[in-house]
Length: 288
Image (cartoon, rainbow, N blue to C red; front, side, top):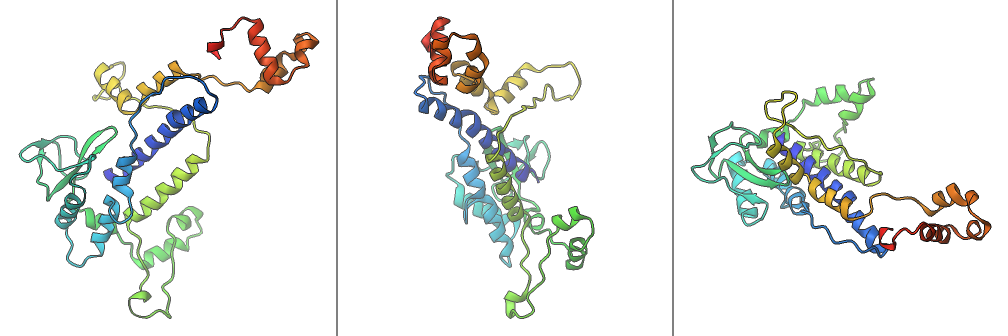
């Protein structure tokens, strides 16, 4: 569960990066506006680690679930074998108690590489105990229950539990209805969400946890600054300070002020009108 949550957070962080940094700097480049390039931490490598076909963490998990003698231990071993040198992947340090845990275990638990793995997320390192990973990934519903939910008159239940009848004409293994894993289903849904967000004009609200005690009027400065740094807010604020966050189309300014100007100005095209207006107001060229 925690791996899926953190994976979703990685995708949302990437959307934030694209909206705030990549698109913003592409506009400056297109408009030939001189703004110092703002460096930010791209998390695409972490997303690739989780979702790449065949070798991503979730795809390796799905593959292990198909193997007759696979165990949580063999899953961990395959991960370390495949990604041991990946910059965002690590083994739990031997003899060291892990306090920032993802799935399984508790604060102060010690793990071996056969029992856990570490992913270096944008918000910090998380140690995942592999105990129960294979069972939770399959999580099959009884076919009768699944069919009953699919046939429900409640449209939400109907959509949540799509059901496909097994082909009676199929032979052998092909006759069995293919069960989609939790990880595979999550991967598909998260991809659809990312596509939907990519087609929208996004606005962001950043939630900051002020203290670990969850009490009002208490501010932990170091914790707050650390969250701002991990979420990319420091770079975003720097970009807004160095760049041009306020936008106004030429036509809007032209429509607002043309009737107040002499004919020599109001007869100009909107871009020329705006430029002459700013020159008349003696606004320095580097300000726009």
